[in-house]
Image (cartoon, rainbow, N blue to C red):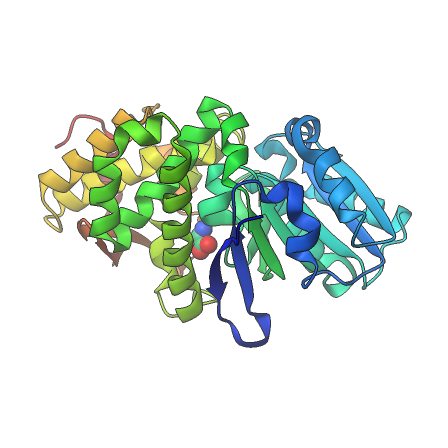
Amino acid sequence: MKIPTLVPIRLGIRSYDIQIHSGSLGHCAELLSNSVSSDHIVLFTDSVVEALYLQLVADQLKQLARRVDSIVIPAGEASKSVAQCEQLWQKLVELHADRETVVVALGGGVIGDLAGFVAASFARGLTLIQIPTTLLAQVDSSVGGKVGINLPQAKNMVGAFWQPRAVLIDPHVLSTLDARNYRAGLAEVVKYGVIMDESLFDFLEQSLEAINGRDPETLSRIIAWCCQSKAEIVESDERETTGRRAILNYGHTYGHAIEAVFGFGEYLHGEAISIGMTCAARLAVRLGITDAALFERQTAWLTAVGLPTICPTERHAELIAAMKHDKKVAGGRLKLILPTRIGSVEQFAAPDDELLAESLRNTFP
Ligand code: GLY
């Protein structure tokens, strides 16, 4: 086996490594042997990943623990609910899970967030290992410790910061990811370029053919690049208190509102973020914070990879009301992350509802 690319997350006693290696799922016992020491592992996955990788990973994990139990959850955002979470807590009781039990989350962002929250909350916290299998989870949600579930009105409203003990990324699994989920992950990829790294954005513009063709080398490079970017942010602001980590929420206040208003699962998270980044860039142009060229470059890239950029409804008042339920409201004031140039964003107080509604219209600039 080749040596995996390592991206360390340095958080004192909560430090861990992201290991990136094509084919690593088939070697996960070896790669996780330093991180897992327990008699009991509970492996969480969803009904799609079950058919593809559950057996392979469960067989590997049996080399690390005497007992490996698996729990399969219905695929889709609707599973990130209070009801599902309660069922999982009950299931852990039935499986006689205790504080020594290790939770392994094998799947996309839904599984990582949900199993992660179950790990954070059961018996006041179980060791968590993330094995993300979608592009979105590999570049963003499995790294940095945010875990949680949705309330009907608001995305990720109940959650915790719970750092994993290890993150294992196998870029090869992206070859079996459906096209819609693959594209959705690309929204989070380009986000890093816009918010903090012009050279990444340039690379993404130059690599469109390789990205649309899922070229393995290009994807491994992009995943490591994004994880490195996320590591830098999480290390400097683990619990989102200084404003640094908040830049990762670019497009998310709009996007979360779209997800909630349409009902969780209708739009994939990455699709909603693509529309959300478009609205945020439009607002930035309207406010004179950035120029139209940024909006056009970003929109051209999102369109070229097949992501939506059109706000799909004229129910603007409903969307704005949902935006105000976002976690980014503090002291009654909604804050938005807006781009100033490619590679840089800042946090601004949201303007009045009329300007917000304008940013949701697809006609400007
Ligand atoms: N996905 C945003 C964050 O991890 O902070």
